[in-house]
Image (tube, rainbow, N blue to C red; front, side, top):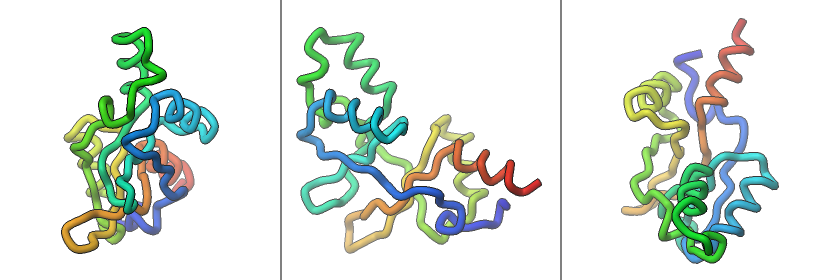
Length: 132
């Protein structure tokens, strides 16, 4: 299992939002898709950041008008990325070492990154359970 590539291990694609969307719209998207994060992309579809449920909770804690705040003000622009041909063990190492829950698999296009897949700790556990 550890030698599977990100492409082989992927279960789902990527659900995106834009930096200018409201946090309420992002919260609804997460709830409707039963996911814990959205990949933030620019107008051309290139990686701009990630916004998580925790970011939304922080916004709600900090502001009464959280639902009108913009994704760009609460997203994390420093995204940990991998390539589609990277082995799953690299993803595991990143999740553990960086204390994160997900990585974004990207395709480089020039000097920009096109998000292709979100791979989370839940996806790895899914494969762990299937390998028995």
